[in-house]
Length: 229
Ligand code: SAH
Ligand code: DHB
Ligand code: MG
Image 1 (cartoon, rainbow, N blue to C red):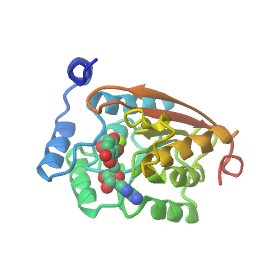
Image 2 (cartoon, protein in one colour):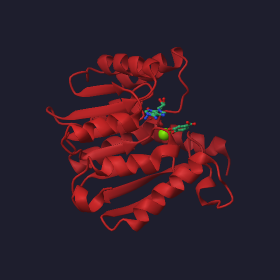
Image 3 (cartoon, rainbow, N blue to C red):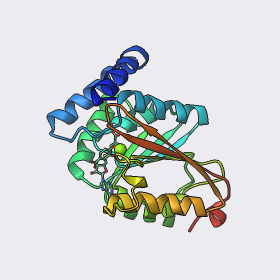
């Protein structure tokens, strides 16, 4: 198997099944013009996240790691009229580009881009008793996934779905000799989930435009006292 073949299949799915969308195309163009790294989810993955949020009937979505807003637009498009998405981004330049892209998509009323370290924004949301989210997408720095799990569980309710991106990283996650901080972060994230009786999790590997990687998916089954910290 070659990466050319993986890319060809992603292109085939994206061409055939993921309708071209001017706002999403514009978001990628503007992100690229601004020099952002093209580490956004692939189009077929964006639609996958969108479908998961719709299947779940999510009304309140939380994202960690906005970049240029590409996955945020996919997820916000899954929301009902009165739904909201909050997305957290450390880099103010990325956040500005994302806000513009989200405006072009006509989603400004539904989406808040919060600039700052995700952990700090989460602490503030917990302190201010922000209502729980229905669907949470973890996609900021991987080293902090354990911290993000601890915090986002406190912004969850029974039934909250947590999806995490980049949990495979070319198979490094299962190489116990690998001690890169990102890899250790993802492994500790899985250890926490495995040990937490108030969560149910699986993970699937993906190949394609993003190389060899994968998503995990978790459903929270107990209230924050039980599921959380
Ligand atoms: N979800 C996006 C891609 C996110 S890339 C998409 O698919 O379209 C990861 C993003 O996380 C980058 O923009 C990076 O600046 C941001 N990030 C890294 N560390 C962070 C932190 N500590 N807090 C918040 N955001 C962070
Ligand atoms: C990186 C981050 C991502 O969220 C991703 O999907 C791919 C790569 C990165 O930081 O390299
Ligand atoms: Mg990612």
